Length: 137
Image (tube, rainbow, N blue to C red; front, side, top):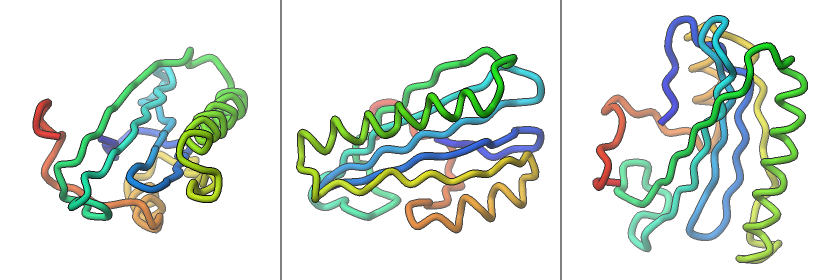
């Protein structure tokens, strides 16, 4: 789950979807810490399609990237990763059924600005319940 909080700089998000699934990636960092790239697949159950409160399956992964690496370099490499992930999914489920990768630039650590930009995305769903408990996804 993405957490917007004071002092967390959000660089960019990437998103694509297809029948029964979607993929989200986000690049952020806290202060002068390393970059964090968090991404996940979400697989809908038949009754869950489009329901943000559903208990469909999500699989999250996180990796860190040296904080000295320039943001533009990290973003360029993650653009390639996002498109490659999308292309692998499209090969499996069908090119016409898989959306293009949507990339949103934030470039801010202002909680209000990041939240406003995030919530303007058609795929974003607010949650005030906190992280999901493993096994209850």
